[in-house]
Image (cartoon, rainbow, N blue to C red; front, side, top):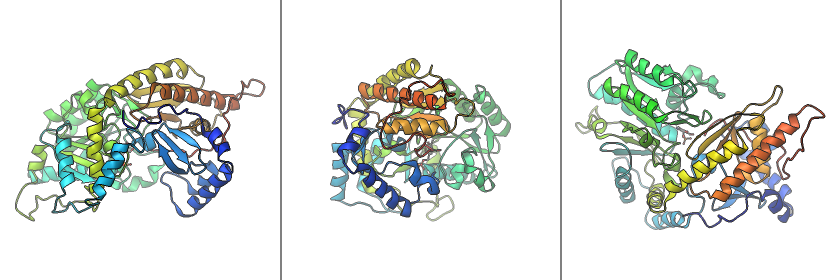
Length: 483
Ligand SMILES: Cc1ncc(COP(=O)(O)O)c(C=O)c1O
């Protein structure tokens, strides 16, 4: 399997490698100081950044990141869910350098680029969209933004004014641009932007067992006003891996179909194999009108996203040159040639190397291991999972503070890079992860939960602290609100 070169490397090597690096902690601290002085990190309180012992990455080998002090970390969050096959995959490295010898970038506005055409042709064969057309951008949020605007103008071009509402779910996350935070739910510290959010029809998210009934009712009640439903099929990732049944997603999409409302599937997180199929829409039997892809599209190498429009949507935009049916939207780096080259090579590797079969096997192993070794621990409320997207919801005891952050800090100190979403520990290992690595990640997580629980146990009742050594004190890892 691609990216497998370091599969025998032991997880949990952070502390040992740090010792070998000699002045490791000092070196790391110096980089953190330089970093904090000039870089502004997203979803991060910069006044606290340096004190939270961040990992400053220097390089990578396979599924391991190596920090500036030489400490190794298993990348159990796939660098925020983008890395698929691992880092420094020889074939993907070669795709970038080969393309560099041709051209790194040329604009897609009014002109074309050979490798982008080849990528679109290859994607056309696999995306669950009828007669697909590809509008490339750079981030997941911009793919969603494009989809929102396309859905709106689709109705305008068809002469149906007044379709200016979207149906969106509670707990949804679609990115951080103003359009995508509008269809995304409030909260997670983004309440400050509430005055900027445009109004949507909002029904409950996957945490509510009756979410699909409510969404179907909202489609029936509002269909004349709705431009589109915007939905993360199967998994609401950034809200803590809330999961839905495929039949429920299909039922809501079916209601949209019968009432003439467009369906926008946001597969920025679920796309490219994370759920064990190439796209989560496939589990639900969905063929959306618009599909948003990002993150794993380049295997985690370069920023690229795409809004995929079904042929009937695209056709509504055809008309006279420079006329009003044109989609007046486009990003400078949309369809970057280097990103396209690596995305094309990545797609071929996904198809060639049995990666999806590995995801399904590892997902089943992870499910069993979490059920046996984590679900029953004190302080664990729930384990949620679809494929290799998993969330362990913690339930800290009365007075227990910042458990998500502290559990992840303990895991990082043991050489497993984790990042919480509030009190949900998110596990998103690369698609090529081995059985041994899954085992170790679960062991490290269980030990980390045990260590934090022991710290918070009433005096005299502590278990063995079990807090792994290393550069990170429990309680000092950056907390992430978003995938
Ligand atoms: C479902 C979904 N949509 C959109 C986004 C935004 O993607 P990006 O961070 O690339 O803008 C994310 C990011 O986590 C996501 O999970």
